[in-house]
Amino acid sequence: MLSALITVAYIRWSERLSTPPLLATSLLEPCIFLYRGDRLLDATPPARIILDGCSGDSLPALKSWLAQRFDNLGRLEEVARTGNSVTLDGQSGTGTPRMRLLAEETPDGALRLTLVRPEGEAAGIVVDSLSQQAMEEELSLLRGIVDSAPMLILRRDAHDALIWANATYLATATAIDAANLSWPLPDILALDETAADAKGVHRAHILSGTELSWFDCHNRRDDSGTTTFALPADAQVRAEQNLREFLQTLTKTFADLPTGLAIFDRERQLQLFNPALIDLTGLSAGFLAGRPSLYSVLDQLRELRMVPEPRDYRSWRKQISTLETAASARHHVETWTLPGGRTYRVTGTPHPGGAVAFLFEDITSEITLTRRFRAELMLGSQVLDGLGEALVVFDALGQVAISNATYAELWGSPPKDLAKALRCWKGDWNEAPGLAELEHALGADDMGGGGRGVIFGPDGKGVLGWSVTALPGGKRMVRFAPPAGQDAKAGKPSNSTTELADQINSATG
Image (cartoon, rainbow, N blue to C red; front, top):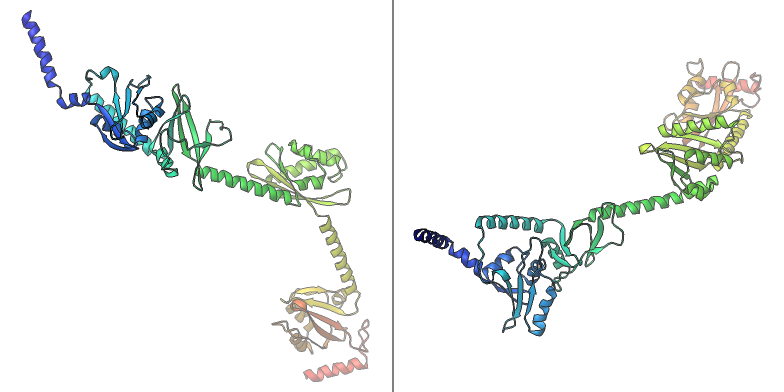
């Protein structure tokens, strides 16, 4: 029995001797930090292990770590103010060991922070070194990932006080105001007044000087507080602002258009209209704001007599159905002559997604001007046809622009261009007398020149006098008329006509 007890004692003594001295010493060594202001003066090895896991060795960085384990860190300011020591008890929670923090002022005015665990003050703690190493490596990896994340990550406690932030947040806060960066950390995220979206994302901004940065804040709540992930949203905010400005410009443009605009979606419900539609059609703004259907709008237009009056309602509905179908498939235009004397042009165009847009234009003045212009052209044509002279006008390219009825009676159907006109005037002559002078006067190449002369007319028409007159735009007008003394209707030459013919013969002979 005694030998068995001796054996067990020997084994226990051997295990104690086999414990690495360095590990045992490090476990029992105190954890002390020494600061002057925010600058670290010295720290024990266990304290430096803690600092390695912080975002830096400054006092604010250490306070960020301590805030996760202690309440009322603001009491540390009492040490510098009163000179009295302060003791804080750590929080008790899942995964957070209960510790004690002693803060006191040294004789030379420095701040000494001592971190102890009450249950371990009198004895060391034996841990599995391999497990501890694995946990430290994993913790280092996770800290590196969080600190290098391109987003702001911060932690608030149950009272909404900021207790932790990653390196990106600290760097941003330092860039804003490095001189006033102290504990507790400033909350630099200013939430936008707008409510969260459907996914619970809040919009926040940070003002650094004159530069405004925007973030989308995703909050994750638990029993002990809230973790906020603030993702940069500058590009999205700029896109939204550009879209709003574009819509404002588009809306203002639509409002200033004299053309009535009505856009219907694929269900043929009114989605957009402008004030000109109200002015042109007489539809009330309240009716249009109720997003009526296309057929409701057209029925209302029919009651206001703003559509062509049909013979019967059935044919009118069929006509409207044809308009809607054609507009949804391709560009479609109709002209509506209204009972009040006005004329509208209605244009239907398809849009992506099955939408249809209708444009209403008042073309009454345009139609009136066109009719007046046509009447003036008809009057001018009648005046030209009443002249006794045969008249034809060539443009700058030698194309026939206009001719009168007398020319058609004299030379037949008017030619299309100058070359065909010259062949017609030449007739059966190998070298028509006087034609060379006429061609030279017209200037077949540059349409220059002008003058007058005589040529033989068609069979039975006798000798004709011609004259070329220059008109604006490079046009030339050619007139044919019997010389003085010739009977234009009979085409019989008089004595003076015979003399002119003799002159032509002598000139060409």
